Image (cartoon, rainbow, N blue to C red; front, top):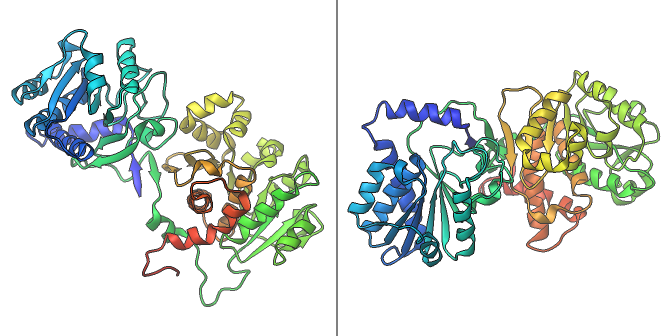
Length: 483
């Protein structure tokens, strides 16, 4: 599992470690890892042209010491000092002793445009509020260059704790981060500025509970439900689907498609699209009544394509089992009814739906996704899965790390994809996973299935559903493809 920690936590860990190490040793560890990553990206260090963009903090010091290492290997290294009077003195001395130079007034643009590699050491993890005009101007020059760009710890102009980008920011090909990931490296919009991320271990001792965590194959494999020899379809869990309408019958079909592949033993469908559902999936159990009359389930999915059927959504929310609320259900669900539930609730909005629930503009949610998902979870006392290029899952009670998932592909932005995700997550809820686990595991598998379905080309939602079993099998080691 990848974890990310706040600036405050990282700073505290750095102070504790520095108190036990010789002066400057921690910066030398960071610089060594940074220089190695730069060398790997360059391929051939000798004769390459490297430009360091050096700010006033330790971030600039890391860049200077790394530049000195590259200079000793034969690179031509030049430093652009954004705050000459506050440049890290030891790093500057090291660079000059290694043969590096400082770019004189007016030479920054030419140096950057001629560089093979630009190292961004303008602002460190404490930077907030956007870049100053001189730095923003330099970033614009970097964007015009053909140089590879390496960011030190995180790209300048992005906020480490939130993933927000306020104005100009460096777009890196590679970010070399130290000790741990920072939340901004995993959350959009900042994530798209980071490029590939390389983590350098500098010996930090961090608490067990992180601010953010990202599941990997081994974590998903551990959480996925598996039947035992004594299992039957009811012991494996039954998920109920309240979806579809005369206008949107396909939403019901797609939600059922996701649910059937999600690990539950059976799927019950309630709604006006039963003929369409049965024609596609004859194994579905259908009901003519509402959720109260459908029979026993271990979880409900309520909302995809239901139109204005608020009564069916309210009936599902009144049941004492986990309920996933999506799409039209998010608009129809009574906030107090959601807040008053004693059984778990999982809400799965995209940015537009989240904005409507919070009473803000969509661009505010997209700019501050981490804050939005936390605010929604607190306001509704529900686990919230905020869909997007990086999907976030926040638990209904504070304290647990927010989960982030980036397994998807832009091709998943297609009609009905969210319905498949809802059915998949609801099935995992019915099999016994918590809302946080069901949401994050479903997002992980859904993203992988989207990749498999697309293979670099447009795809459709039903093809994504068909690839869920391949994604499920894919998280297990080759020697143990199933459990």
